[in-house]
Length: 197
Image 1: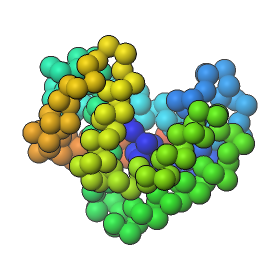
Image 2 (image 1 turned 90 degrees about the horizontal axis):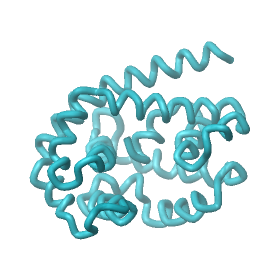
Image 3 (image 1 turned 45 degrees about the horizontal axis):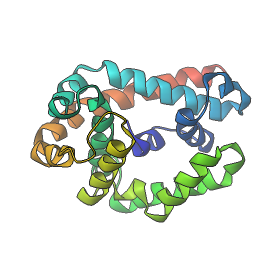
Image 4 (image 1 turned 120 degrees about the horizontal axis):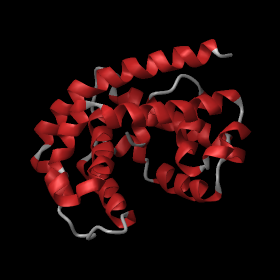
C-alpha cells in the first residue's frame, strides 16, 4: 500500500507519524519513538506483509509484471491508493479532503521525529496535495512516474501508466476483493497493540 492507505489505516495521530516513518528509519531505531508512533511502524509492517501475501494482490501484479517484473508490487501499491481515494463507501469527497489536511497537520506538528529527506518530501506532498489527488488520473500518473524515476533498473519511459488505464476494471475488482480483508486485518492488529499498553 502507498501513502494514502497507510495514513488511512491508523487509529490516532501517533500512528500516522509511525506509518510514514517506517520507510525512512532503520529497524534498530523503531524503539526510539513514543509508543503510539511505534504502533504505527508496527501497523505499516503488518499492512505490507498482509498485502504481499494476499492472493488477490498476486493476481493484480500480473497487470504490471510483463513491463516491470519484480517492481510490479510497487505499482500495485500506487494503484490501490487511486481506488481507495475514490471509495465513497469509506469516506465522502469532503471526508477525504479533511483526512488529507489532517495528515499534513499531524506530520508537521511532529516534525521533530521526521528525517530531513522526509521533511523535504512532505513539503512537496502537502503543496501538491498528493493524498487527496490520488483520485485523479494525473495524480496516479505522477506517482507512477515517481516510482519509475526511483527504480534503478527500469526504463523511465515504460508505459506503466497506460497499463494502469487499460486495466482499471481489473484493478478495481482487485481492490474491491482485497481492501475489506486488509481493513479487517489492521483493525485486529491494532486491537492487539492496544492490549499491550
